[in-house]
Image (spheres, rainbow, N blue to C red):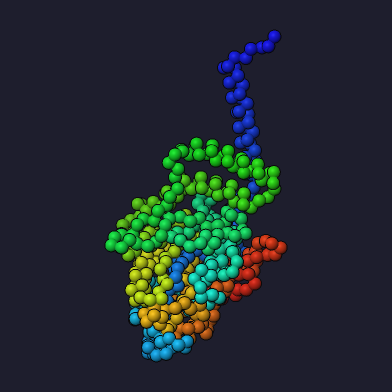
Length: 457
């Protein structure tokens, strides 16, 4: 005779079984977590670093060096004469003046930034390999203009880890270019940049739109429900790893999902600027038509490095002035001048500038001769970038272009040298920061790179 099982008893038995399974799963998850080292945990540098964080101000489109930070009186004197390559020379429409105790020559396009001349280290002998935007931008970010390689931010995160496990170690704001410029390529996916927000461009006729930060919170599920959902997905991911062996892509997905979950409690606070004083917002130009959008990004950047984010990249575009040089340069410089000056001042007063390397760079420079009458063409043979804080000499100029600004002639700094110097400031030996892939060791500087010792404080 079959024994009859009551419904209530059956449910109790099933519930107990599920409880045992859940307990076993939880124990397995904890054991797995303990056995795996967090790839984002802070790591020891190769030697004592001068900087702990980087804020990279990326100027897309290539600003003209001879109109900003590379004063060429001979170019102005010979304005309209035939240039080296045929087209007539175009003197800068803006005046230059010596700024600060250091006497650095800086254009009148930067009235606010000029006040921080004694913090700037101008690199006036920059060179890259290509005068094409996409290739030069890729090389500026990854060291290569031909092949997809890990970005500078990804290499930094791989080498040093992050100081805050609840936030991405590498954050990108305002970038609308290809993800390869902030990707991790063959490095584990956890080291790629996390893109947040939209464009830094301001609206015409009104304050800049607040950079949007979508998907920071899940409006459909509370944290507890999300945790249950995520645990189920992560169990499937880990089962795949156990079955198929080591897979960097799956490892990256697991770490990224966990980080995204933790970010829901940290990012809203980090991005909330309501607690900042009105004086601080004014310092960055927040609330002003031209500077509102980029000012907010710069303030976000300060808050991010203050919270332990290792590498932050901000982007400002529309610097490609083949025509309408006057209008274009004045518009773009007005967008960034006050926000960047505010960023430097704010970092300095909070004692953060000494540990934060601020970098300003486009992908190349512009020609001293005119294009289309009132514009400038691409020039990768000589241009200017600058650094501030983070162990570089302030009020210092390194390298030089010829008397017109065509080519670097002194203190030449190729992009590989630039990358080697940045890594050195972070305490990383560019020749030792390697990753084995496809049968050989790779590095950011590939087979090149020389640290510019002369700019080190």
